[in-house]
Length: 157
Ligand SMILES: [Zn+2]
Ligand SMILES: [Zn+2]
Image (tube, rainbow, N blue to C red):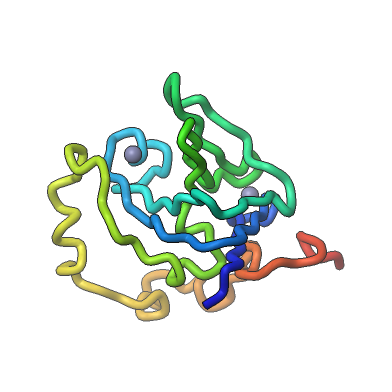
């Protein structure tokens, strides 16, 4: 199993690499994580003893409380870190391979939104199932950084 993980923000201005075992992958339902991620809950992977390196750029940080900073890309807004005295956790969805760090525990369940346990029961569509309602999808051009490291970004020419 690979002990090197990479990832970054949507625009590619900030990229990271983590060397070492990642064992503490979680979701947090607390209200501050909801707000910081603009989401129903926050997926976070604690780096613990692993070594986190910013390989391109660095996050801008917001001091969300007296003990915690939240890192994000100041160019595109992707949430990237939760940083406290006991270590740094990295946003799981920002990993190039989020499936490699499945969550094993939930935190902050006092803030859990009541419908979260039923999300998997909702009607489910693939993106291109919706092509008639959103014809622009047929010729969409992604500006999202690919899910691997690149020498330069955005690509020249
Ligand atoms: Zn970015
Ligand atoms: Zn939280």
